[in-house]
Image 1 (cartoon, rainbow, N blue to C red):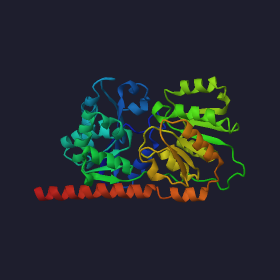
Image 2 (cartoon, rainbow, N blue to C red; image 1 turned 135 degrees about the vertical axis):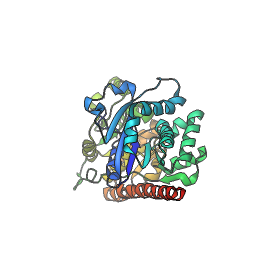
Image 3 (cartoon, one colour; image 1 turned 135 degrees about the horizontal axis):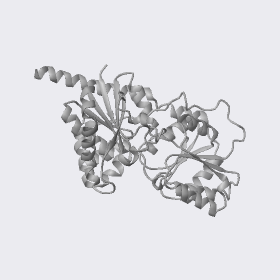
Image 4 (cartoon, one colour; image 1 turned 45 degrees about the vertical axis):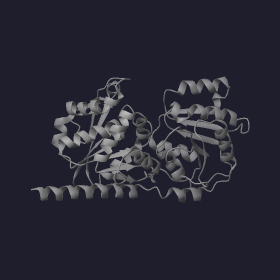
Amino acid sequence: MEKLLIITNLYPSSWEPNRATFNKQQFDRLGKHFHIKILVPVAWPQWFKLSAENKSEGAEDIRYRPFFYTPKIGYSLFSAYMLISLLATSWRWIRKQRPAALLASWAYPEGVATAMLAKLIGCPFFIKVHGSDVNDFANDKRRAKQIVWAANRAAGVFVVSDALRNRLILLGVAEDKLHLIYNGVDNTLFFPTKAQPLNPAKRLLYVGNLKANKGVMELIQSFIALLKHHPDAELVIAGQGAMEPAMKQLLEQANVQNKVTFLGSIAHSQVADEIRRARVVVLPSYAEGVPNILLEAMACGKPVVATEVGGIPEIVTDETSILVPAKTVKPLTSALDDALNKAWSPRDIVEHASQFDWQKNIHHVQQTIAQTLKNHDDKSVVSI
C-alpha cells in the first residue's frame, strides 16, 4: 500500500477536538486505500495549548509540530516560514516515511509549502482547497501568485465547489488541474428521526465558529426581530469564538438571553443530535466553500436557511432551503419566519442529500492519486 503524507492544520487536536471533522472523516476513509501519515503544523502560540500526547516525539501516524511565523506581519512569507518549520522539526521524520505522494489540505500556506517540499523529496503532490483559503487569501496579490504557482505545479487540485473551481481558473490555474469533488456525509451519524413530531419546537440551530464573518451578529439581530412574530422560538448555538461576548451583550440588551442557548464546542455525534432536535439549521456566513453542516442538516431531513455565497447554491434547492444575501438582517429575519411557517418534506430533503456521499468522494480522490502514481512510476522506469 502506497504512503500518502497529508499536511494540514485542519485536523482535530487536544486543544480543538472538534476541528475540521470533515477532514478526519475523509482521511480515515482514504486510509483503506493508502498508508496515511498526517503532519499537522500548529501555529506556535497554540502549540503550548496542545497535550503532551499530541507533542509526543514517538507519534508515527499523526505528527503535530509548531509552525513558526511573525504574527500580523509578513503574510506573504508564511509559506516560506511553514517550509522552514517543517524542515526544522520534521525533515528526518518525513524522509523516513518515504511518501509516494503529498496532499496539502488548505491552499495557503500549506499548499505552497507542500509544493516546495515535494520538489525537495521528488514526489508528486496534490492540494485540496476549501473556501476562504482561496476566496480570502487570493485577494492579496502576493499570496494569490503563490497559490497559482503551487496549483499549476500540482498533480491535481481538489475543489469542494464549482464556485471555487471558477475562482481558481480566473486566477490563472489550468482548468485540467482541477477536480470538483463535493464532501460527503457520515450517514451512520446523520439520519432523520423515524417519526416527525406533530408540533415540533420552533428551534433554530447554528453550528460553527463564532466569528464576525460567519454572520453571527446578523443572526442574533434577526432572531431578536423574529421573536416579535414567533415569541416561542428558540435559538441554539454550537461553537465558540471571539464574537460570543458581543452576541450575549446584544441578547441581554434586548432582554431575550433566556431564548438562546450557547453549547460551546460539541462533539460531532452531539451535532447530529442537535440537528434532529432543531426545526431549521441556519448559516449566515459572508463566504463559504461547501459547509458540511448544511449537508449534514439535509441528511437529517432538516431545511436550511443560509446565505447565497460560495458553493452553497450548488448543494441546495428550493425544496431544501431558503437563501438570502450575506450581511443582511431583514432578509434573514424574513427567511427564518418563512422557514418556520413552511411545511417541508423531510423525505425530499433526505433524498436530495443522498447524492453527497463519502464513497463517491473517496473513489474520485483515490483514483486520481493512484493514476498519478502509476504515471510517475512509468516515467521513472522509462528514464532508467
